[in-house]
Image (cartoon, rainbow, N blue to C red; front, side, top):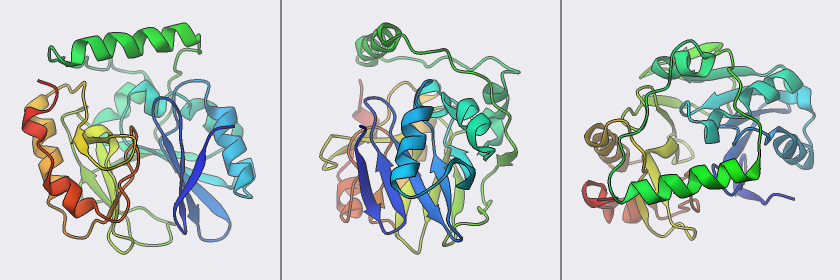
Length: 244
């Protein structure tokens, strides 16, 4: 059984070896997901929703922070099982739909062996390939999400992919940064997420997120969530020198 950890009264982390999924309780007994895990993760995600008291039909939204397979890989299966709507950054929508090839990352020397190891591990696991998924709502900078228990700001944070997005919940002082920010397992140190298509742009996106005043909790997709002391942890980050 995958680990399900409560982050706030309405947010839970479903931890996977690669690419965590976050579930959000919506008003009226509904749920949203932030990302979906690698291909083949749908049964575990649906099991987690069941543990939270949710039925498949109660999954209303799937918000994809970007197009990579460890985040969007199970979106098509979850849509088929639940009828949920998919929301994603407008510039990543063609990659998710399968109508344009996804740009490859520009790897630094330090990133190359990690990328090779993760790719080999995923291949050895024998999971299915990702399937294209329709994007029902293309999100852009300044958009807000409907149906959540509090206001949600959409931030365009390119660099990891062209159309990456972050979700900022000022009332809860919570941030879903996508792969712009990663953390160590304890959530005590954060780094620039590796495998970027445009490193300098990703660093600028990191600095933008780190400068947000009203963030105490960062729900990273890789590593442990930074809970309660995000300002201090983000202020100590050095993304310009990460992965070099």
